[in-house]
Length: 404
Image 1 (cartoon, one colour):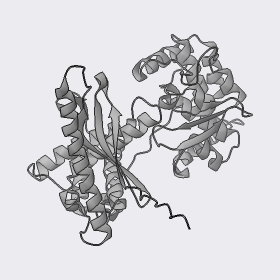
Image 2 (cartoon, one colour):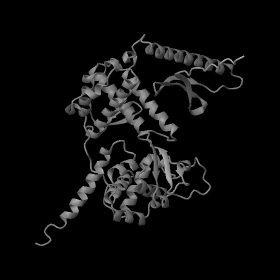
Image 3 (cartoon, rainbow, N blue to C red):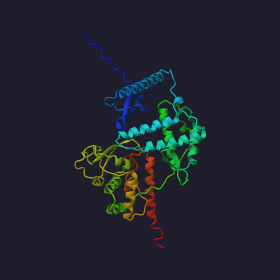
Image 4 (spheres, rainbow, N blue to C red):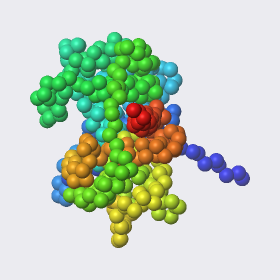
């Protein structure tokens, strides 16, 4: 008698997951995976620690899980109905500001999963959301705006708002205009608008909107990035800096390490020993970059390895470098550069610029440099090529008038 075939249980497209919070509580969210696209929905539901002798804690958690399962069932129903053509899945019921918050939470979670304590991208999305709230309040008299309502005119209006907006700082009460009263820089306008465009693109991919209206703007309607001068160190200045004392030896080692590998401060700050493949020849860093979330395999030069602290008894999850906060790091760099007699405005990020310019000036092609830096487009890397070309022109100009 033939054995009955084992029934394969279909995998549900929606899974309930939990995120651990402070004091033992957990945030409940949905992990939605469909058509090769993963998204997350944070439900603003929380499980509390169940204390011995307090049955009400268990009751509260049961109620919370019942609510989460009800929302999960509704999301599965929406997916099934949408695939059957019963309901057109569009963004009529999704508020733009809620969608921006979802984008922020996704980047925060991705950063945490990669071992980072913070996400600069999530911070930029948060600031963009605050600016969008201001724009909606002024242009739409505070009426909620759904994804379906965001059209070309909305996008163009937001660009105009950004171009006339003042510099701000984030407080507990939201955005507060900077005391200088200066306008937002073109690059800030470009950054905030690009976050909106990326969020709309994600909504399009997930079928919430039929097209991305940000792509319909004419070139002169867009927020454009302004190319700024990128400070870097020459080989001679790098030698002078190496010889000079730094207030924090870990900062000195990490900065020089970045000069020879190009990693950003955020990625070096979170770098643990398990992400350093010491069995490879040469050694290799295998990590997911915080800013772009790209997984990179970065070979380390002998000079970069020299700058790494001794591992000693450190375990796989221990940090390679013990760095202070971002602001404290740059403060130490500023003091260190001054001690080296270098009269340039140098921040930690300039180490990344130094890495790129040193490679290009030594004949490394743009494609290779782009891959080493983890750039998504070679257009970004071309900025460094322009720097090197200017150096060549300046060198040639030194010969002018030599026979006069």
